[in-house]
Amino acid sequence: MKWITSMLAWFVDNANIVYIVLGMIVLALGVSWWQNRRVRTLAIIAVVVALGALFWLLTQWIPTDRKQLQANLWAMGTAVLDRKPSDLAKRLSNDFRFQNLSRDEIAQAVTAAAGQFSVDSINLWEFDVKSVTADKAEIWFRCVANSAGGRSFLALCKAHFVKDGDQWLMQDVAFYQPIANTDQKIQLPIGR
Image (cartoon, rainbow, N blue to C red; front, side, top):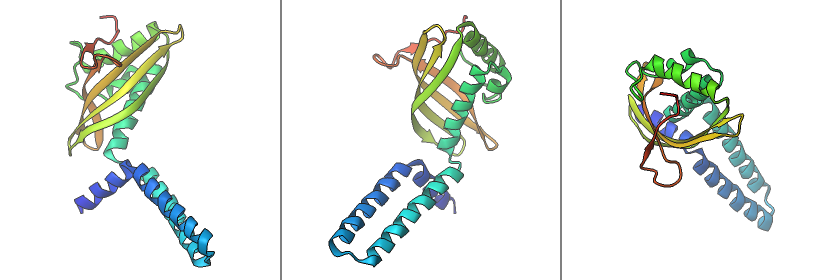
């Protein structure tokens, strides 16, 4: 039963592949209909389109680990923008440490720095989940924090998560140069 769940999660996480395959099938059937004008071909096209719509609904309903990891990162960004250190801290594991700060200290420092630098937007993109097991995950992504004054902090990020019950919590994070020398770590500007 577990392999069915993991296979379903793979399909949901790689939905674009399914959409491309379904699109190619509809295109081929459309060409066939154009050449032969058979009503049965139109019915098959309708069935394939309906399968695509059902699959899209499935991708909206199934919370895969990858989707949960990304949602957690977005929620952390929202907590920083809203200046709510308690919301940020609850998404970090109890043993989280960064730049010699504990979970609660880093949550306070990051939200305070966001206020100090007038951060008004945080964007995340290029999510690349490197590994997911039953209780650990590694995800790479890019982030940018923009301030009202036009300053930006851009980084390539590497985060490790651990599963606590049914929730993924960040265990550690590292920030790297975003464009060149992406193996060089950079410090988070939090005033320490």
